[in-house]
Image (tube, rainbow over all chains, first blue to last red; front, side, top):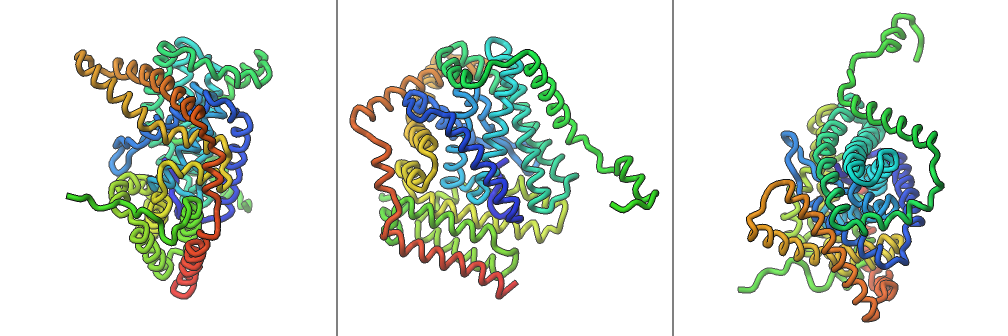
Length: 259
Length: 227
């Protein structure tokens, strides 16, 4: 879900999250090599594909629709840095040409729709694997996780910046986007496997960027796996969260303690 | 029979594409931060209407109306559920006016000038380069996609599995074409930096930027005078 202009009203939230979005983009830009013309052409082609794919809205629930984000496929094909760059390009065109997503909140949309989905896919690819059947699984898990994380941050933004109660914002946005993420995850897994079969050179070209990082130990790998599982489970449970007060909230009025 | 123009040949006051983007950002920022009162929203609606007429983008905005409303609707639902319908309606109206203004002003720039204009305004070079490449390749991708669909139809193939296979082939072919296009452009002496230099803000942008600044101030003034 793209956030439009004029919905979040808290200036601190807008400026703060725009700065975080700009900072994330700056890091991605530093890691993406702009001199590699071949990589620019390939990333540009994937961006063109995303522009076309995101134009198709599929009705999801009564009164709302969803479209693919596409960050998963791009990240698996060109790496998280170029994936974030590509998604930022898509968001700029959509905001300027199609009125889809806001200009003043472009940083928030970069976080929700570019940074978090790209990092989620990269994390799951590092933990699960990026070849053969593991590629499909990591594409599915990463895409679903990226959708849910992006929607969670958007819901949090609406809670803090637009005064929407958390019990309404989280179930609605995370629920809708998780449903979309399930479908997108399946599509991304299929497309990534096909890309690996038909053009293995293209999908393995991004390994150069992965080499920038230090080799990971088994302990770190296991920690990342557990972190991913915890985040995934917590995110999946958000729509089921109860609005009833928890034990502490029940206890406080009885004991007379002040909050 | 001649078709009506969808956008003017020259933007108002002969402003550059980067000037148009600055105007779009200024107006959208003013509308997005306008107070939710009659005065500010009426002024914003007036500014949006003038922008749509001046930049001649009414038809294009009409075509994008449904996705635009769906996007706004998805964010408005939690507001409508948790507060009054009137407030949700006003927020939706403000969001709609901001999106329409962005499309009216920024959408009047051409596909070719958008990326260099963004680069001239300080968007990182690699983002501008990828964007320029993407906007050029939308046509390549569409042509390749149509060819593949036709070939698939002629062979009588169908099904979701086959569709996924098609996607893989489309990527592989389009990537090869994209590489060739980029190489050909370089060999012909195309330099993105030169295109960016031509798009820099200049004196010719001053009148339109000044009008946009006055309009932005008027929206907020109207909000204060008529709550």
